[in-house]
Image 1 (cartoon, helix red, strand yellow):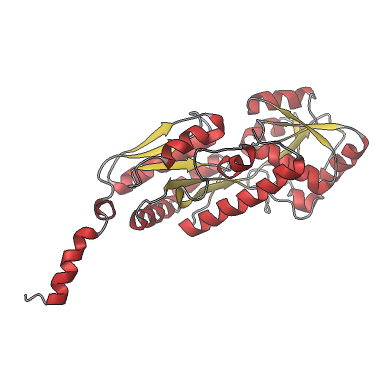
Image 2: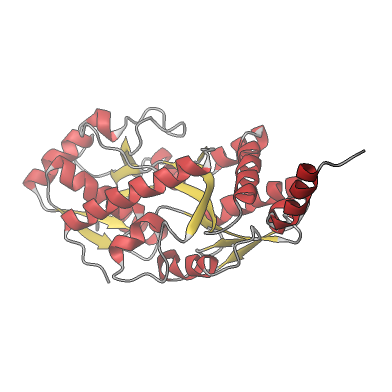
Length: 318
C-alpha cells in the first residue's frame, strides 16, 4: 500500500498523542476516599470500584485518606499525576468547604476534572416520638412558640446546612447542636435533648419503624422509595425546599480528555447494571449517571448555593 506525503505526516503526529490516552489503564487505578472506612462514600467507592476493575482489566484500589472534612484526601488527588490512575470519590462537602475555610490547598473547580456523579441521596427530617409536632407545618408553628434545637453530624455537614436552609425558608429560629457522628445525634434526639435532626433515610429507618422517631418530611423534590408515605418538605409546608446529597468521581485537572471520557462511559455502564442499582438501593442511594459536564454543573451550583446559605446563617469560616 502506498502512503501519500499527507498520510506520512499524519503518522508522524501519532506519537504526540498522550500515551496515557492510548494505553490507559496501564497499572492499578487508585480511588481516594477522603473519609474513613465504613461510611456511605467508602461503601459506594468499593462497590463501583470492583465493577470498574472488571471492566478496565486492572485492579481498582480504594484508599481512605480522612481528615479535615475531606480536605486531606482531596489535596492528595489535586497534587497527583494527572494520568487517570488516581481518582477521588467526593460528596457534598467538596462544594461546601470553600465557604467554611479561609484557605484551601487546592481550587475546588479548577484543580479537578469531573468524571461523573455516582449516586444521590435524600435526607429525612426527624423529631422524637414524644414531640408535639405531627407534621412539618406543626414543627414550624412549634418553633414560633418555643426555642427549638437541631442536631447535626458536624458544622458544614449536609444535615447542618439542610437545617439552616429549612430555618431560613420557614422563617424560624433554630439553635445548632453539633455531634461527632450520626449515632450520637440519634441518641440525643431519642432522649429529647434536641428537637430535630436531618438524617439519611436508611440510617433512620429502623427507629422510624419502631416508633421511636417520627419522620416529617423528605428533603428532595421526590419522595423516598424507602419512606413512600412521608411527604417531601416542599409539599408538606416549605414550598421550593430541596436538598440532595450526592457522591461522584473526580480526576486531577489535566487528565487527558480521552481518559476522562472513557472513565465516564464505563461508570455510566456500571450504574446501569441491575445488581449495582439494587445494591445502591440497599444503601438508600439512587444511581445518578451523568456526563462530566453535568457533574461539573452540579458542583458549581452547589458551591454557589451553600456559600449563600452559610453566609446567611452567619457561619464564620475557619
